[in-house]
Length: 267
Image (cartoon, rainbow, N blue to C red; front, top):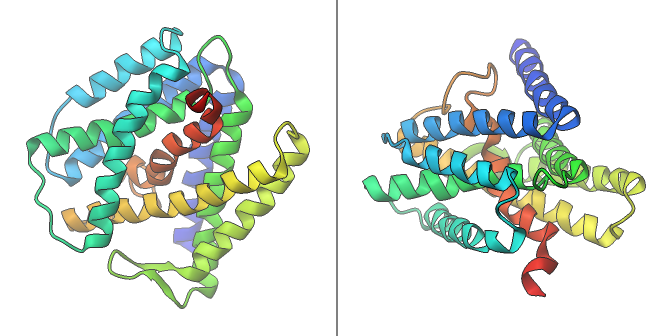
């Protein structure tokens, strides 16, 4: 009970910082996410026994240019492609059950394209300084938090059947389904406040968010097994580090961004 209490308090503080920045000002939101992202990249590098500040510097440079409206949506197709290539490698690693030795270059590229670009697209979801889309950011975080919270709670109460025992023994099918159901419920509520998109579009986003958030968590667990540690850090009591807290968001954000801007890339 004490662990759940500590987890709840630190989680609420984390949520309050993000939501407060979203509603207050886009620049503050960008700074908050950038700070969290930098910490997540540092924690990731500790997991893989690596040290390079280049990925952090490149992400900061990209965020700056995006915020200044020097980068348009169509120009982000190349960062998206690089992220999806990194995701393909990570999915292969997750399902292959092979021991992979990562050298200096792969560790640097994963820091940049898996963590760094994933964090960048969390910021890019809101659009640049000319048109900040609060709704998009809210939908993204609310779906991620809903899925993760109810997957955790349903798994604790009802979990019996392991989802991916080799990587995460405590994650269960019951937890996954619980998170998915409540994510659908939240999208239904959200659609009543923002009916610009069809219910079908919201359901598609909800389903993909739930599935991808689960993969993001599993991949992060794979890295912790690689490093033989329980948590990526200790800065957030009850949750571990920022990489622990942001793993799903980092993995989902590029795909979420693509769904929101799909017409820009196919027209």
